[in-house]
Image (cartoon, rainbow, N blue to C red; front, side, top):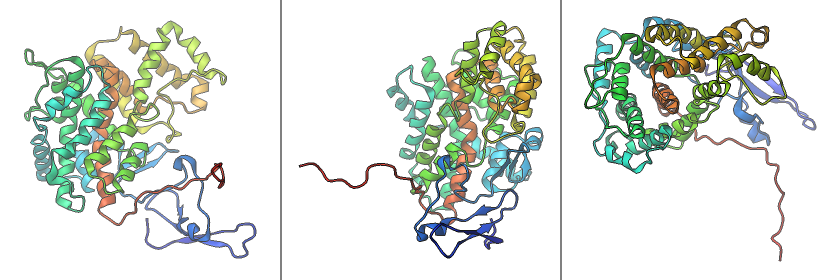
Length: 428
């Protein structure tokens, strides 16, 4: 956002003779914003449920144009990053603002690899969770607990501390995610291996056991890397805004990220790909799809097709285009064409791209639809889907937190339109 207003808006309110002049600022791209900050001094504030028309901050990290299906990270289109880059390079880009050169890339990858282990005492921390605890409940708890182990990097005013914390979180999230899975399975934890790539290492910790190694397919590793990459950041969504809000209080970064994980857990946010698989379970078989399509078109029927359309994207989700290709590569690699769940998913995809109802309403398959199918095909249980989302989103959260902490900021304090009782006396 420019420091100087490019133009002004005038707000006239009944009974007020002089209009209130509000500055209008322009970003580097996207719509202009009206600064309503001075309304408070005039005795007013705005009403915007869900903050759908409110910019809570200025940022240089990610830009979304939902009408045209555009997603840029530091100016780079997501399609180009998915084709030419990888997850760890994108992490570096989100954190530092520029792509790394070869030396910077090698150093960053080496740093992440040597931060993948967690404090051994955290192993006993997992024993406090019920074996049937949801992995997101575990992840939320253990990430918040990291602040009890890494006191040397919780000074939010120290740039080096913030850098170390960013590296630790990106490196340790796959380890903690895999440990959450192993705990639910009743299997021993598998230590990370520094000779493996980021996605390979995660899959190895998920599926290897002390008595049997797990050979990671390059196609599957590439698909997992893309899942992480495509979920790395998505501007001021609910969880990222939660991280910023928690961080604005001065909370340590581990607590702030744990707050983001809690927000992500909601089925309307990170739980969407889990909802896709639950929907497919409800449909039951390909033969039942026509009936459920009819139900989805009925405004009076509560059933909804999950994984289609997006709150932000009114055009095709650019991440979904990449994930669609990856999904087909994985299904071909695994040879699971006869899987009934995946057969339903493919038929729904076909209908959504051809049916006039879906096309007119722009209910295209979104990234959650394809990522859920991929994870199901790989053998990852539904309850782990949001954990993987959280793992991929970590660099976005920490980049936004660091961006806020690095400059002047205010503690978040939304207002309200009060509709309760006016003052009344306590009865005698």
